[in-house]
Image (cartoon, rainbow, N blue to C red; front, side, top):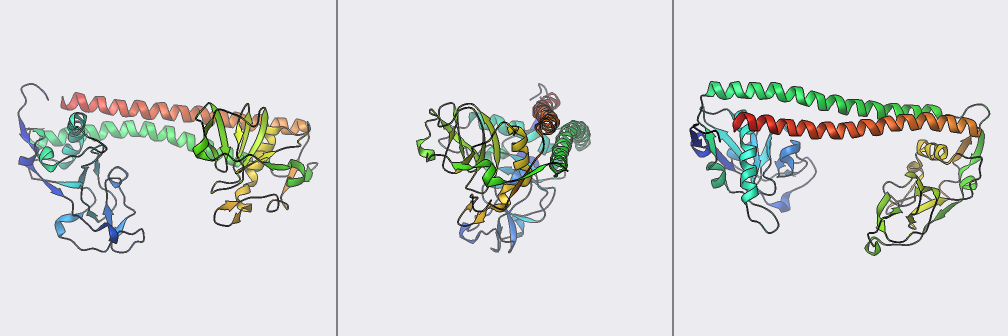
Amino acid sequence: MKEGREYKKLGEVCDVQNGFAFNSKLFGSEPIGMPLIRIRDIKRGFSETYTSESCGEEFIVSNGDCLIGMDGDFNVGIWKGGTALLNQRVCKLVPSDKVSLKFLYYYIPERLNEINSKTVFTTVKHLSSKQIKEIGVPDISLSEQKRIVSYLDSTFAKIEAVAKNAEESLNQAKALFQSALAKMMEPKEGWEEKNLVEELKLKSGEYLPSKEHAGGSIPVYGGNGITGHHNESNLDGEHIIIGRVGALCGNVHLTNGKIWVTDNAFVATGLDETWDKKFLMYELTSIDLNKYATKAVQPVISNKSLREVSLYKPSLDVQNDITKTLENVENNISSLSSNLSRTLTVCAALKQSILRQTFE
């Protein structure tokens, strides 16, 4: 708080409307009744939970309302998910004509962080409406509040544009890779047609339940990719691994080094020197083996389900050229992904710095 500035308690300029204790037994995922706002919905701005239970009008939330989660991290959000219901442990700020709601949205999070850092808890931290009402709010004119909001809106929009540009560049690179992958893997004249199960000779790994993962440095490959780490390996060197069981079965990985492959994944064996393994990994990825899974209790691909699938094999030189091209695109994606991660971190830190300079 700035020295010499006068403050009022939040409760003097704003009502805090607590949520209603809806019956959780009446919650559903089907859009019957009205959406119900729970703590997890505050930051994302929409709800996938519905209830037909009735309540008073004071528990109805509209777009633009400012909400606070009263458990966990005490998140603050502006609601944008349409008319919905206010569940317990979520509160809504109802400002008087002396305070800007958007001003409170920008100002309150750091004050809640201060409460959060001082809150003693066992499993989940809890916030009371009394604590919210006791928050000191700068006693400045409504016009000054609006000026601050306008400045922050404009500045944050520029920061968010930087993050959005970085995200769009990454998405464009990913789309380019998928397009290049599909185009380059189209069979051309002179490519040999091979039967997948005859060419690859798919062999299951060894049983290793997750409870027996020893947590070492060796990746464990299962039906959905890497599922954990172990302190022993059952395979070493360069190998193509294909998920056999699970929602993501058919995923393809090229490994190099010590790994453990469970019986929920295949190892491609019997490959000769006429195959570039990375090219083959790309080709298998382009086929989308998941669509050949049998739909049992959980999806499964097998030698039987893949027996009609063909591979197309160009000369080794062509394989190498295609691999280099796709690797370059993937390297660009990796670079853009790292850049996006750094950009998001910098943007978040910059926002926090601007808020501190504005309010402290």
